[in-house]
Length: 518
Image (cartoon, rainbow, N blue to C red; front, top):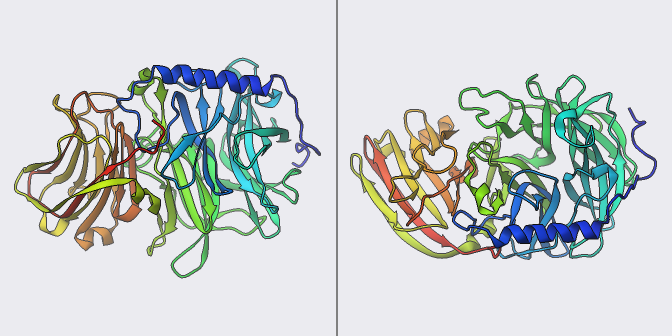
């Protein structure tokens, strides 16, 4: 199957790109002008107006961090995709950049879909992305027609780029419409690309291509096929090497699986982003050594993308509003990214994703509550009104008898709150939204290992923003990311114990400063 890669990129303009970008900027500005900030994030990346989804083109280039993202500039629901852009010198203070891509070529006329950035052997940056068209020319009833594209930046600030055109066409007889989201890396003297595919028999796969010049790509093989026949597509694939505690190289394969069915605590979201750890040799298939595991156990996590900077594997995810009602749709914006996390392998050989160290620079001040003991069904207010804070706490499980205990965040006068708790009956950390007045409810649960439970201690870092919560369990061994749409009025944080006592060894609350995108 090498006959679907053109000798030279195919460039078919149908619209003026500059005019499309100007129109998109006006669309975002119109949405931003009527934006309601009640849930708009203070220290998470979001568009100032319109809908966003997947993080794209993540990179550190010429002294700046760059985050691109899928953007629909004309509404707060998914629509024709563009690439939005923010940048920073320190990952703490961000500024908005011009929209990078709008649909302007025939091969992408219905959307500039997700992709990645990579720095070549000359130190220059290249973008790879998917061009999207509706197969019937006007809507999704006939499926997708998707191809891989490339573009080159016009300057070191990455404020604009010139599209080079299509580099990999779609063999429609071997693909069931889905064919997208390229990830590019170099191993040895060869460049490789993988992207997600739904095969002709509707199996979720990742295909492997190789290149010597980063322009002409040859198909090699199926890099990986998901073992679950219900999974029909692997979106936003990721693939990178990582060292274990003994210095052995492993490969992590990541993807967002479409079609997986809920089973117990697993796969509770509409689609579920996860990974496997295994081995890979250039030209071969990925050989998993673990089962599929979730990157994040929360309600709203999808489409993560990672990139490597000086040995650090950093990842952003999209907090996807999977299920209606989605109340921020009424506020002129919709969707945000998670905090940046650094991926490592723990001593147990599993992935750990902790907030990058830079995030401590967002702390404006610290309130140290010290140790706290709550008696049977006790409650203590930690903050009267907290819209953007980080809480660090250590629970003494061995000295606590509560069936559930933790923090009620976004607790308002109407009785609404989101509950971040340790549940002793199931041995898991939960984010429970049953008391929320706005948005989808339900709960999610992150497992603890036997060793974690036996330790008698539980460390939590809880990041509360205006409309979301991220919970990092035991240094990032598990994470839960969920939207939490607070009701009107002061947003208290309460420490509570249910049906028993709670012993907290330490609890600190940090007020967080803005990252500058409000």
